[in-house]
Length: 322
Image 1: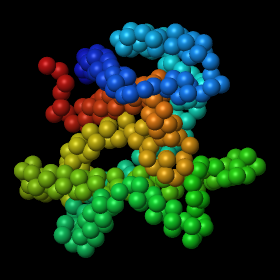
Image 2: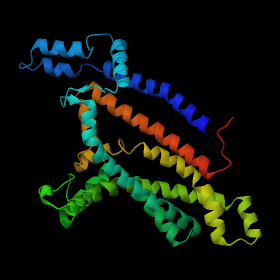
Image 3: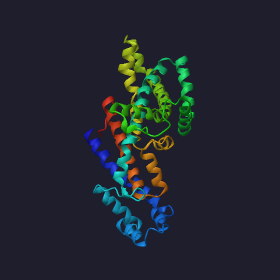
Image 4: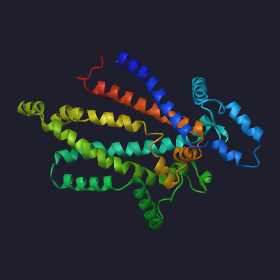
């Protein structure tokens, strides 16, 4: 396992280089750049623009700009955001925690319901419970995320129990510690439901199919012939093998902790990385876009690596040695 982890970390280096190179290339291919807006501003002098170009190598060829950016990344410098007039690391750090709270909340809610619902649907195959949640899942998968967010916000205007957007109330600073926690929790309900509902609908169907496939295998039939109880067969033998594909999916979802809630954040007004990334792309804020892409890529690689490690721990049949 140690050799496998080292190999995966080494393989991730050229992968990250390829992702960042293509992203940098696409941004540079797009017509114009952020400095074009400054050139149209009569209050910004030509000397200021020339200083920006010289400091960030924007007057150099593409490969020189990319190499300079890589050199700064090695030093721990992620560049400068022209939009927010601050370092990229500072801009991302100021919003990353908010996005992490929302994504982690959605991740927890999703996986709390996925496995029990999938197991119950498999055990009650073709009965009322299974048919009800099958219909519910098809409806949930058919509703777009942005439309569901708008529906919940529209419903909140009538109930007036849930806030209509944002992360805090206006008088947030006047609350006690637990009052602040409760206030943030209320603001989390709608975006968490939006992010988790679609995942629950998809993943519980996958869990159901996995468990049904395992329960129909020969070794389960052999366990039943030896007189093992149904509970032991389910929880000791079948469930562990049915969870293997779900661990891989969990690895992909881990990568979305800081990058997968962008559209929902924009709709519900959650002050996370979603709006920051959208503004960066629209304004061609080069280094802020690169910082967001690099962060998402690292999380994706980390999530896949963690899922492989957990798979190796859960299933002794999986060995990563040659």
